[in-house]
Amino acid sequence: MFQSLKPLPADPILGLMAAYRADTNPKKIDLGIGVYKDEKGNTPVMTSVKKAEDMILQAQLTKSYVGPTGAADYNDSVAEMILGTELKNSLAGRRITVQSPGGCGGLRLAAEFLKKASPDATVWVSDPTWANHVPLLGEAGLNIEKYPYYDYDSHSVRFDEMAGCLSKVGSGDLVLLHGCCHNPCGADLNQQQWQAIRDIALDRGFTVFIDLAYQGLGDGLEEDVYGVRLLAESLPELVVVSSCSKNFGLYRERVGAMTLICDSDESAKVATTVVAAAARAMYSMPPDHGAAIVQLILNDADLRKEWDAELTEMRNRINGLRAQLVTQIQSAGIDSDFSFIEREKGMFSFLGVNVDQVQSLVNDYSIYLVNSSRINVAGVNDGNIAYLADSLATVLKA
Image 1: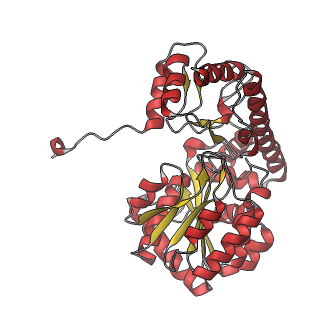
Image 2: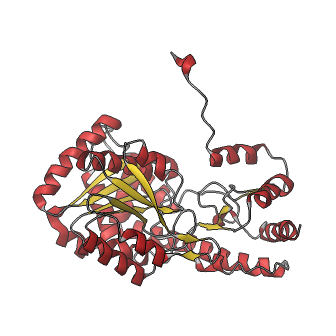
Image 3: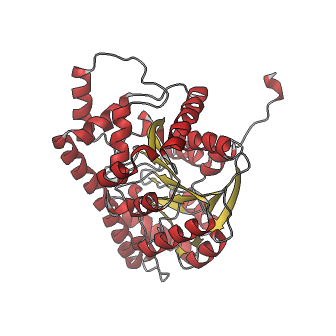
């Protein structure tokens, strides 16, 4: 049976990780994998997370199942973090939130649910979008189309073209938006653009589907969900998939959620049964440990204060690195304008170099990034920023 299988190409980012590990160059830099790194190049466990784990270890009395939709208190806490107390309460029975195995699990759960709700639906994704969006949604049987988003020349959102495309999307289809810190380009919608998207969605009747993987790493916990909250209070239906991998540093714990806003309490009750059945058929129950950590942190005043301070430090470091990198590139004698890096948000930006130049950075200088030129800004630190800028300057002048 298995002899009939054909090999599939390796994931480019995972392949890049393997090559980086095998590289013996002491100056090597990993700008590929999308995890936060501190000044020493480590992805640390937050102090607030460690404290929460200790408290759970002492107090937990069972490892019994939590059920297909996850821990109710976790779901409620995540919904409040995303929507805020007032909006969450005003939505009341129209809103359901279910725990998922990370953001990826939430996306696939949403895809399975949407396939049942609208079997012929098309999901419109940004060009570009996170590479795993297409397989996660497409493998569930949803049709995928693209709308214009990023201008590689001006390093900005092609909003007029985006709005023009979405103005032709019909009822029954979905539009996938990045809630903040767009991956891979870092160019986010501003408040006026979110308002315009709301108006288009109301006019055309399509359902908005938001991937919220980086809340708190752009401008702040509240600021980063402006668009989510605007649409949640304005539209009859909304899908939001959120992740705690980045803002809690819980990458391997697989902590996520899917929040649905339905047009009525009755629709929400029906949707809950469909979501629970889809979860049961795929993975039965979500893992509990990471979710228990998040739930405790969000509901313990001291832990929440400490976590908020740690998240603020991470965000400020990323934004500071963006400014430092622009300055260092200018100091290296590069004539091209890289100021867009400072304007963009979150961990990712495109350097804007071509594939041959990317390959030169990888092969000649041990600076690892994917062929699209997307970099993880958090991979930069005081010890490698000058080498990165000088290497980039040499490659651009070649």
